[in-house]
Image (cartoon, rainbow, N blue to C red; front, side, top):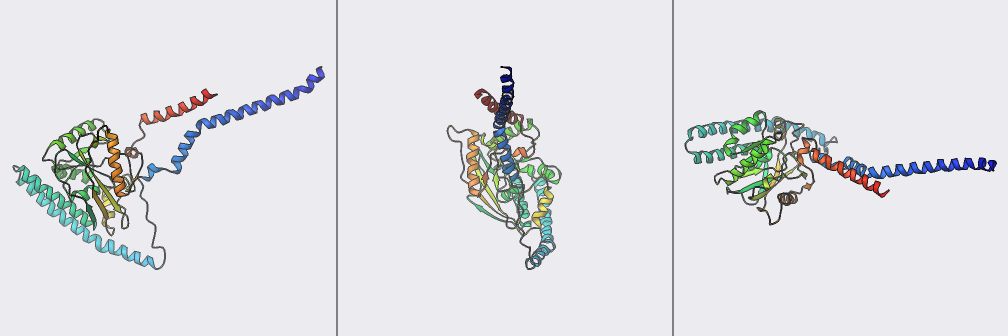
Length: 364
């Protein structure tokens, strides 16, 4: 009997060892299945990063790669930098001189005549924006009826660069809602553009949102105010995509007039990457290009439908602008360009992962 037990013992030990290995394999496979969805999502984000793509300039394919085309490219560089750029600088300086002189005269000599003064200041800002567009040899095609001054309406447009405001302003003197900028741009905001009734905000201040919302409502109720222009994406996108629209412009209970802007990249990419380039250098790049070419479509005004939420309203308007301008929609918040994801979003992802793990444990 003892000899039989001794003979069977190695088999039992081998069996137990094999069982432990199988158990470990099952446990490892189970662990892998638990984290598979998270790994799949992470790998997908790396392979197809649709968020970063929205804020990247896509360099054009080089065409001066052979001995025949390179001399032509060099000739183009000489024409743009030696001839066109100085002429554009002279044009811009002359326009600024005329504008500043006229603006100061109107502002100080017509202090008591508010209506006449506002009208003349409007025309002067439109003139100055036209000078800017001319300094880029801008070719802008406007489609649809020209915006009119009416109460309880707001214009919303996709956003590629701060020059969007200049392109639209040369047609109609909008009061724009814009991020407060430092430097000479900030000086223009507080001195000249203030006369149009523009509204400034600061992304970093939570209390600022309530103040801005009240200013927006007061502005659209005033029958003498300039049309209010809002870029609901909240940041510059590279004119290939549209990111999520903020719902503030769609909660005002007024008519929303969509505006679609599409730049042609054949001569220059008009996208302003504010994290890598100052606005001064951005303007310099435009002034040393051949031309800035774009189309602007004023689309049919929209109102909130019965039972429709402000978020659904914003998405419907974004659909219209994206289709008209040929832009791709992505479900991203543009503010993620500047800030980390909110704790709510992080907690939601953690909760989803925990629930998936608990489901697998319950199945066992």
